[in-house]
Image (cartoon, rainbow, N blue to C red; front, side, top):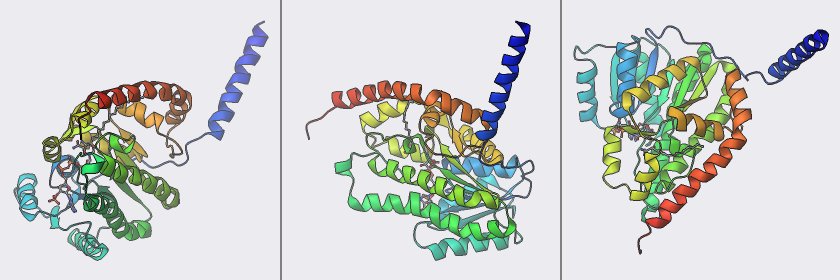
Length: 327
Ligand SMILES: NC(=O)C1=CN([C@@H]2O[C@H](COP(=O)(O)OP(=O)(O)OC[C@H]3O[C@@H](n4cnc5c(N)ncnc54)[C@H](OP(=O)(O)O)[C@@H]3O)[C@@H](O)[C@H]2O)C=CC1
Ligand SMILES: CCCCCCCCCCCCCCCC(=O)[C@@H](N)CO
């Protein structure tokens, strides 16, 4: 009897070892222990989540930070707030990341020269515009603008930073998506599309860059209290508002803190709260994994989560139907 139990245990352990070996994480990013003097580029760092990221990198970790955004007054205000003594560790550059690749490349070259020829260690593609509006009220030019800023802007910045990362053989690239990059939401036909696009970009790029020791993090925040969010709320349809409330509202510093943690680990995804965790599990698809526990809960829970999500979607459809107005 005892022998049977021991044999069963050994057999079980052997099977588990084989499974763990077969399904081990795809790559193993090294934890970034020391961020002191790291060169961090943050797009949209003059407001909201980007500004909190800049503050943390500068003051908590002693990194060197470059902020890219369009409005010079807002940049100057931000520089005064984050670095009242005009430290050369913070560089604020006015550039529209969506206009031309050359402009972005010049800004990145400027940034590298400014920070004593240090290649970019971490690029955070955070700049975006967003507003919620139903499909028929969104103008074709507005779709184009959102794609230019939220998607092409991220591509330009990534292309401008990559050469120096590849030469050095290390780097981290972050794309700030949204929970609206994980499911379609009423009022976000333009916004969701740009955030979904980032997922395809991030997955393909990670497959190219893992062998170069460059790791990507895709971030899925829920509503976050920022100047952009306040602006968005002025015209947000009731339906969008009610659906978004399911996931609550976070502070920008909470979102920023977790982005830095995930970037240091090199995790492919970064999500917030229980809903965020469940959504990320549900939508993992063919995403890469970096830890064993991700493999375990993704493979165990996804089917059940699909059933739960169908209930949630049902309540969203009901809510949308109830709010129908005569066009
Ligand atoms: N707040 C929220 O509820 C959520 C936000 N997110 C995402 O988080 C990120 C940051 O959002 P948040 O902090 O709220 O945004 P804000 O609107 O508060 O700030 C956006 C920043 O991006 C900059 N920016 C916009 N367009 C351009 C451009 N063409 N070129 C350069 N810089 C640009 C803005 O500066 P300027 O206008 O001067 O160029 C500003 O610094 C976005 O990617 C957003 O989609 C995700 C989920 C929820
Ligand atoms: C099985 C799991 C259940 C999960 C529940 C799903 C809840 C979905 C809520 C969607 C919230 C979208 C927020 C977008 C915020 C944003 O990006 C804007 N504020 C910026 O425009």
